[in-house]
Amino acid sequence: MQPLPAPLTCFKAYDVRGRLDEDLTEANAYRIGRAFADVMGAHRVVIGRDVRPSSEGLANALAEGLMAAGVEVLDLGLSGTEETYFAVSHLEADGGICVTASHNPMEYNGMKMVQSGSAPIGEADGMADIKALAESGAFADAVPGGRRVNMSETRAAYVDCCLSFVSTSALKPLKILVNAGNGAAGPTFDAIAGALAARGVPWEFIRMHHEPDGSFPNGIPNPLLPDNQPPTGEAVRRAGADLAVAWDGDFDRCFFFDHEGTFIPGEYVVGLLAEVFLSKAPGAKIVHDPRIIWSTQDVVERAGGTSIMSQCGHTNIKQVLRDTNAVYGGEMSAHHYFRDFFYCDSGMIPWLLVGELLGRRGCTLKELVAQMAIDFPSSGEINFRVSDASAAIARVEAAYAPHAVSRDQTDGLSLAFPDWRLNLRSSKTEPLLRLNVEARGSAKRVKRAVSDLADLINA
View (cartoon, rainbow, N blue to C red):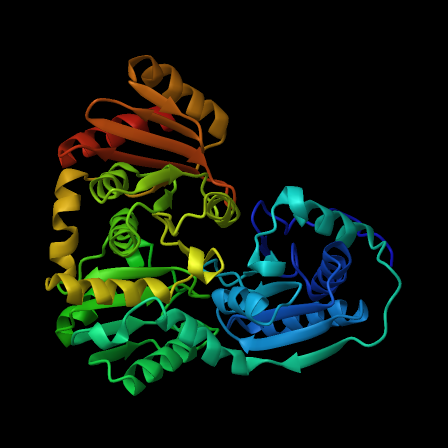
């Protein structure tokens, strides 16, 4: 096969992501399949796909590339990324690829990859080699015997795995609104809801935007965007639900709203889940990202656990979990990782755990997070488009670092002061500079710091 006339720009730090017919084409997907098989030495590979109109064609081309290398393709069909992760280990496959652009705009698509054991693939352990081989086209000779097998029945085993994280007999009555955003979450959620009902769990569900529809008639499913949150919040209040759960397109992230329709910032959810696991595994290790840390560290310290900070991004968090055998890891961006889910992230396990915690504590979700929000208010992630991100970070560092009581460069620039803290980092997936600010007990301090930093970043 001839080399590409230009580099494959769809390869990013964590995965494959790009504009359709520009960065990512079906011909490129075929090449990626061939390269994945050769680099990973794969004989059995799981594939899945989200609901986007382009995903089926890309998945078919990917499968053709894999089969040309003699691979047995285990096809989950429409499914979530975490179902691919699960199936790789459950079926003892040599790797897995989910065709998805998650929450990106309609003109995008991509792929998320893992190797055997559902382990992440970073630049140093395969991603760079896959990219280089896909570009060169210098594949090994085609191998006969490749085939494609429908493996949608693995969902039942995946559901059992998710439910193993909670004691279903102890779950108390709840009314939960769920918003699938017309993404891939609906059918998988229905399988979990059916299993809960079969076990006698007294949870009532109200479904919203539930049917998979790749045209996304209610907007791209990205509940982290403030403009996307009001419809879910209003629906919670209308329904009189105890809480709401919303997912992104491939449902590896889930987001929470309390009974008043208020969106729960991701760092407080990390704290809640850290509390759950430390109650079940006293003294365990909890991994978190460096953006907003004080509330999580406070929960972990009070519960007798050990907090470990990791770079952002799924490949980094997963590797730290594996290296430290931490029971749980969380990012404020709503990615939650579990040792007993092959160290992978899941958007279905978190809401089951939060539901269990609500029953155990006998209070509302609003009450669970109220004190954390008072003690450690934060800005949420604020994105800036700047012409020179390095120069903007340097301006902040020059102005603030001399007065900091500590600095950390685990991921970007983190500076801590007696009563507040900042993290400023460049996105690895988008041309953005991301700012997070937190404080001890003063929302006004957060607001003032954000205003001053924004002026400096935009200077």
